[in-house]
Length: 150
Image (cartoon, rainbow, N blue to C red; front, side):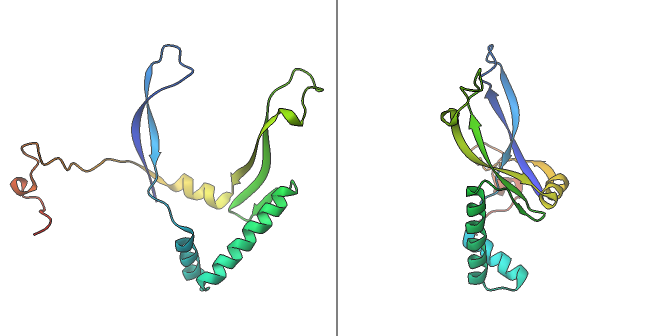
């Protein structure tokens, strides 16, 4: 597995001098749809795609119900889902109330399997192919490169 990145120019909001910095940002290589994922899981496990969809729907329902009860849910080596909140800081304990909570969220802590795959992933800089044939010397016919459509 290879993680691809691009280098982008960015100005950080906390920098008063508005200095431009260069940051490596990950490039996502697409998205696997739910039906495609169920098909892949079915092929790996030898189960019908519909059965896989049913099991995943049941897993999501159980996950939601347990998070709603305030419980964390561990999915083996995949990781742990925990309910969480974000709240505004208060000067006194009396001011820290439910109204100071401004965001509810789900925290995910990856398990051993995900940590291992990410630690072993290679890192590659993503470059877009040079397809500018308007500049002299970039014509594939002149350079002996491949010509598509023939």
